[in-house]
Length: 355
Ligand SMILES: [Zn+2]
Image (cartoon, rainbow, N blue to C red):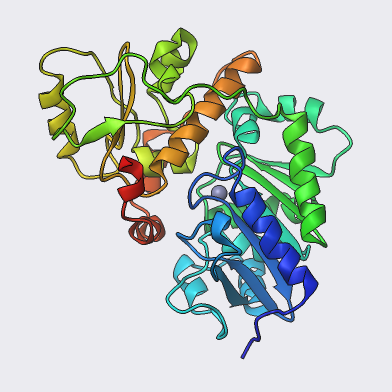
């Protein structure tokens, strides 16, 4: 039996988790995860839950740290084993994040993994490692080229020596920071973010050229900052369709975002797209107008779209450059992943997307 940690460090951990979860530039929807090692337990965010809610309700699940770490170090851990390492004492019905294995690999007491938009903007570049070397000088950091999240990523990190670094930049994915305290880990996130650009300027979430006839198409205008800029700004428009640049964009939007031309038959075309199984066409763009989101899209789709816009804007502000997109095989393995389907099921709903 593992008692819920009842000390100031635990409270600090939950507060820091909620704070980064509430920052759209660090975490979008159910993405990102934090962990704290305590008394042989790895307390980690549950799959499908939102870090922003870390103080509002129990979202941290305890895992048997020595057992998980031993399997990670042995190198033959399989994804399905992790749920069986759940210790009693946590909230019922929740399963640890699929990214739990690398939290066990990293020895520091507190690990924070975020989908920082400034980091992703750098980590999608073909020349990411060279760019990062210039900007992260003096920090104890490690570059990890893209590998599918979960056990494969953890194995690659172990083999590459990522456990010895305070900061790990994950190619086409995000950022990990670790320290003995939540405050220390959070300070590293702030430092990296500042070095890689900082937040982009806020922009309007209002569709300036509204579309008629959307009712009963299954789509509503997006109301996220800058969402409509994806087709109104020519530089963003040139990048916007191919969203296969980080795992959650693929998981929430599908392998690409359709860009449609307006016209009298637009409602009929939208209705046809809305009849396809999600996540395909969860977001579509209409030339000259803006972004639409499916009314039944997964909870978090609007937040992911806001993050996607920030990544592309930061990339352009950095001067652009060649982007490494996922291969179709890489996108397919993300969309067929059982653990992700579980997360999607946990995340289903979408009433807030339509409002
Ligand atoms: Zn991640």
